[in-house]
Every structure is written in C-alpha cells, then in structure tokens.
Image 1 (cartoon, one colour):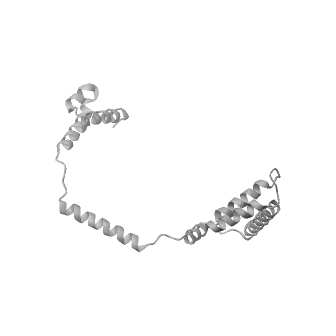
Image 2: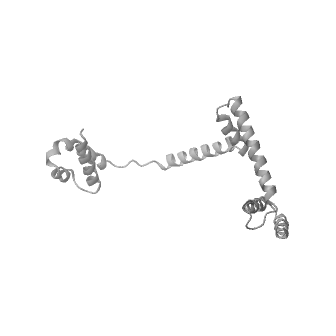
Image 3: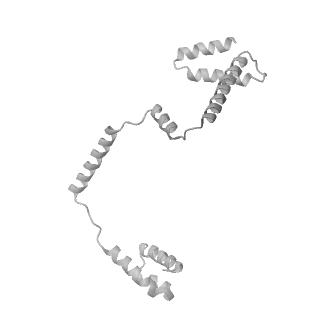
Length: 162
C-alpha cells in the first residue's frame, strides 16, 4: 500500500468514526476509490458488529484473581532497603584496576581532609570573610541534622553566641 493510500485511508477512517458513510468517503477520493473500498467496507462491517459484553461472574472472577495476585506480590517481596539498593548499584559497576582504586581512594582522602579543614578554619570567620559562606553552610547542615527541637534550640543559641 502506497503512502498516499495510507494517508487517505486514515482520513477516511476518521470520517467513518465521525459518522460518514463508506460511499461519502469514496466520493471524496474517486481516483483511489477502488483501492480504498475493501478497507472501508471492512471497517464499516466491524463497526456494525455488536460489542461483546463480559458476564458479571467473569468480571468478578477476574477482579478477584487480579487482587489476589497483587496481594501475593506485595507480600512476596518487600522493597529493597537503602543499603541493598546501594549494594546493587555498586555491584553493577565494573571492577576498577588497582591503580585507579588507589587514585580514587587518595582523591577521597584529600576531599575529606580538605573539606574538614575548611570547615574548621571557617568556624572563626566573620561576615565578609572569604570562608563565611562555608561557616553558614556548616551551620545549616548541623541544623538540618538536628532531629529534636531541643537540639535545634541549643544549636541556634550556640550559633548566636559566636
């Protein structure tokens, strides 16, 4: 079937769904009428068929099977914990060569020591100092990690005294 016929057939099918007759569609495209006629006739015959109706017992039985399967699935496998998901992620990574492992470990040590050192140095900074944003970020992290209101209040009082 050529691309033009496919496009015309699609347009005719839309017209049939909108209520046009097969003959009306064919009259719009007389040059391609013979190629379109079998498809449009088949579509009209299919649309004239009665819609199948499921028996209420079958619907009820299907619904019960679906709900039972969902309940079994919910009980069968609890969702993975955060540590399990991290393990799955790390297990999917390709193993690194020993030289790369050493380089990544060294980089991690430098980042941790550098970050810790900058937080310690920033603890005495004042507004306008280059490390003052680091001090504020450190305070915000401490407040975020304070789980009780009493701990938050103590931290806020401590920050106000500095």
